[in-house]
Amino acid sequence: MTRVLKIGGSILTDKSRELEARPDEIRRVAQEISAHPDDVVLVHGAGSFGHIPAKKYGLPQKFNREGLRVTHRSVARLCEMVVEALSRAGVESLPVHPLSCLCLKGGRIDSFFMEPISEMLKDGIMPVLHGDVAMDITGKAAIVSGDQLVSYIARSLKAEVVAIGSNVDGVLFSGRPLSRITRMDLAQVQSAIGGSGEVDVTGGMRGKLLELLDLADLGIESMIFNAGTEGNIARALNGEHIGTRIGGRK
Ligand code: IP8
Image 1 (cartoon, rainbow, N blue to C red):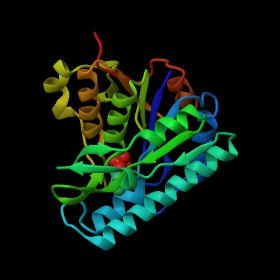
Image 2: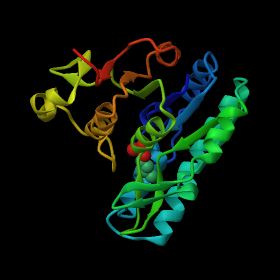
Image 3: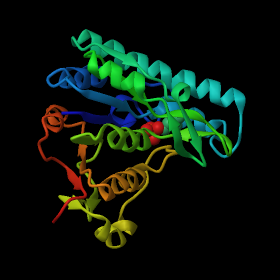
Image 4: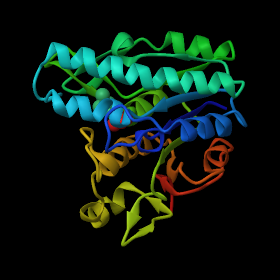
């Protein structure tokens, strides 16, 4: 059973301070993942390691070579912390940097060399990807969000569990998490669904939802849940329904 799990940068970092990791949370997340480590592709958000430098250098609107280097190296450092924490929790994982294995076209993934990911899974290694900067064949360079990665990887591996862990209880409507949302509900709830409260260059909750609705159009259900609540990550990996389900039938 292939599972694609994303842990938001708001869990792993303090999104209001550049390069401010939350080591205790990184450790807890790694511990929870270690309860169900098989066939999991892990994607993590960039948090303050990506969004703050990206904003500072005007990415993705402005092409800036230094900005690309600084932002990539910064998110790669966060990825290293996650891999290290997984290793301490007894999970063998390897970093897979999107910048080095995919190309965008107009901000969307156009080609993605996925073989290393499939081979790692076959060999019992958890691939760890992250939101990153990436080269774009139409616009020099852009940003690929962890949410877009989740959607692409889930589609390509025909994942059975697809879960995005954020710092809220799901897609909130009038302050409460919706139990399920389909494309038919979008018009009704769209205006109530926000971006992110913090610096966020990839669209916050709205961005997540649109990626996952595209996946639902292909018949792959997913969920958005609160990864800050202890036990939820293990539950999500176990296939339990928590937070908001995206797609499927009412
Ligand atoms: O945190 C953003 O990825 P996300 C990537 O998954 C960068 O939206 C570099 C800001």
